[in-house]
Image (cartoon, rainbow, N blue to C red):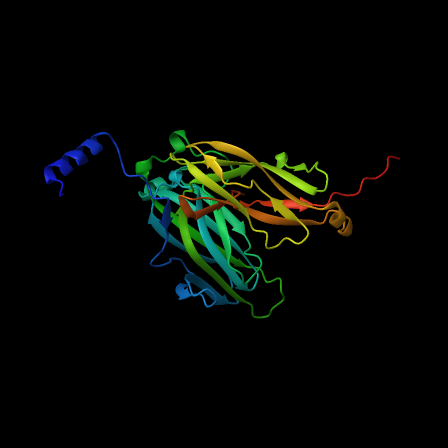
Amino acid sequence: MEVPKHLLLALAFFWASTGWAAPAPSVVPLSPERWEGEAKVRAIVDEATGSPCFEYAERSPQKPAVFFAEFDNPGLDGYDVLEFRWKLAAADADVAVSIEETPEEPAKKQAEGRVRRYYLRKRPNPPGQWQKVFLDLRLDDDSAWQRPTGKAALLPSERQRVRLKFIVTLRDLTGQADPRLALRLAELRFVRYPVRLTGGMGDVVPLAEPGRVGQSYALTVRNQTDSPQRVHLEADTGGLNAFRIDLPSEPLELTPGESRQFRAAISTSPEQAKELPPLASESASLFAWCEAAPDLVTTWYEGYLVKRLTGAVPPAERPAP
């Protein structure tokens, strides 16, 4: 049955009068039509994955490469991270990434404290492998757990554009006479996750259980939605040999806005620990996802650092003198 047009107009007027707006999408893909700056960036298809990506490549660059793209501001306050994948081939390099949220009026760009920046500087390592990056939008460039307020704050109506900028600096530590620098980027997007993983390194304690040597982490998962969520926890154990990960055996059922603490342990057996050198360690990344949105997989991160569960063999106790 077709709804009469006058009823649709009445509903639209009602929702507008109440200030209701459709919820922002959980993911905002970033697919720039072109990159600006001195460095030349081209759209290609990665040979290994068959997926589209962007590439900056140059042989023996004489100065840092700078390139950027601008987008309409989706409202950074409503998102958790900038996610992307990158791969650095051949020569060693540092990569700095910044997100600048600026007013559209050029005069306001000069006002001190009225530009918010989020900053990352690291080396894609190991070279030649695709890696996923999480750039935490909660932390600005001074690593403060806050956002500008008062006169320094930008009003939502003033935050018109977002500039995503990359600076690539060659580090010729290999001694190559003619190094080639190649950086590839793919799957850039702003993401708001249904759930969030947090924890403090000060809450890591040695395992005090018979038959296990390692560490136990106190972590928290929070439901960031207004709906119940069934949350799964998984660890990437591909790099583990002597250690194993123990997580809650069943998915966690979280009510809207609920936070739940859980324990994650990484351990080995006492027998195997004796075969390892003191302080030998292994680590694994932890991931969380909910059944309502299985493609939005989050990890334990802070700033641009992905934190990992690390298990270590404690040093042997020395007898008292």
